[in-house]
Image 1 (spheres, rainbow, N blue to C red):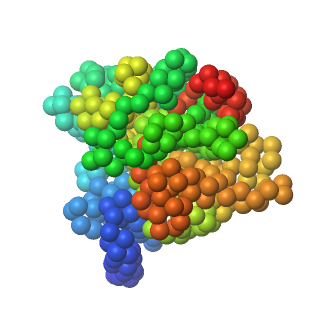
Image 2: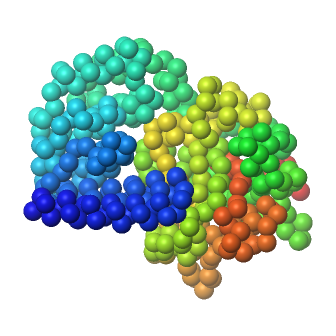
Image 3: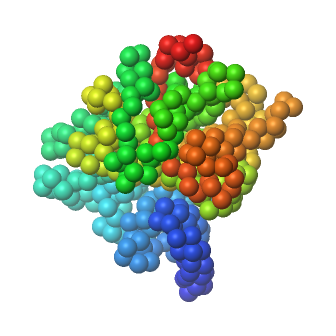
Length: 428
């Protein structure tokens, strides 16, 4: 049986990775790899032949993350007896020392939840203490520990939190500032500065975004309500329709399981992003819709987040509104997209109808509802091409380069409307 699994695994890897390399993009390769690893791990778990390390050294971290995510879904999220049994049996086969500390923390908590005693608690705590004291904890590890603060306290491991706080004060401060942003409403002048500042992004990203549009997405604190997008062109002018009114476009940044921004598949974090082309195919249309999904990327980490600040007015430097994206990036979130869906929202009473929640991406409306056909992803793609100076046709979709600003403007419990944007920006 094990030989059969390894044969199937090798086939999946060769087929999947060959397809990924053919796409010739690191971002696309990563998405294909993660999807492939999840399929492989699911197969291994079901057949009871879990491996605790990757197939090649360079893929070890990715494969380990896929394994932990799969076991977490079965042992933590699922209420099915069989799923929990599979998670328990798989945990018994793992060598916890093969995993990074961030993954060890989740495996430890999963073991506690399932009533096991597979982890050497004293060694687990000592390893974190020593790594923390030596200043060798990475942000992903620090933020994972902080994400599961309550669970660690319940398990009697509050000392870990004290240790992390003592030796990682700067990272702790950033984590808390991002959390504070959930309860802070930015003042109107700050939002106006963000929209109207005309700093040339020419030096950022080798000039790729100099002549591209800026897309803004205004959201409520309560992501159960739809957000609203609007756009500025390369001349820094707000895009308007023929009648002179602001062009706007509805969107949703709500996670399928209502998870927060700082965990995988949580809601779309507030912050600054780049939009970098589209996926090569409109594949998996049931989930992602008929049109190619836009690739959105975090701003790379730099000292004091200087790269992010290149794209912000000075009034935002000390504000917390954009730090959700920083924490989400450093905890390992990736593969964010803007896409439609072939799925349907069959609950007209939901606060976000007719949108469909995603696994952390920005959602566009699609399908027919109440006699109206929605194809919002198509509209957004065409608009981005038009204001990038390209004819809106399929072959130009790959040329799209733009900046994206997602900001939570207030805590009202209703959808953001065009009138809200006009009011906040004092536009007529």
